[in-house]
Image (cartoon, rainbow, N blue to C red; front, top):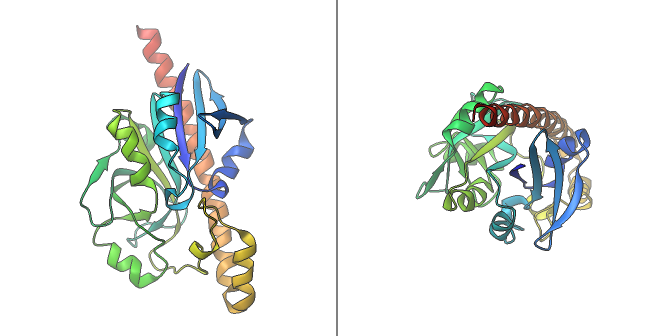
Length: 248
């Protein structure tokens, strides 16, 4: 059975897809991994934390699992005005903040993602922190189309091992939207959001509540779209694998 290793940053990004399937939690290399199958493909999901804070286990996990493919997925911020909430994007390459190093997504996987409805984005730039203001997004727009905090770090070990991989992201906040609260200070040491800390911020700034609720609604819709997109992608990937095996 072929294996695909899928990395999400936060449990909220994974939750809609997790609800759609029977994922079995298993221990691999002393780390929790969630397992399900798509035909003859074994899908293994790992959470790495925002900014890949909890990704020290990730390269050894790749070595232990020996996947045929890798997918880095989750939400992203639009840096250019053409990207709207809910847009499913496949990055043609991922970049460090200053563009010193880039890693391409696998061309065949890009083509497959596009056949499933994803739009190509030239450069996904992985930032050291959340692009929280409109002005900050405008500055980063000179270096990339969309932004996240993890893709480069997680794509690199796949690339170093010659494993075909891609970054698949869904837009939540467009270029003209600022963050409604400081999510980074609300995160724990493993890069997971503590909702009690978010609520504490909102209690101190009640005028931010409508913006937060709007952001939460966009996030819910976006992650649900991502879940459906992953289903289509893996079903197509399984179909291609089966067709290739039959032709042999």
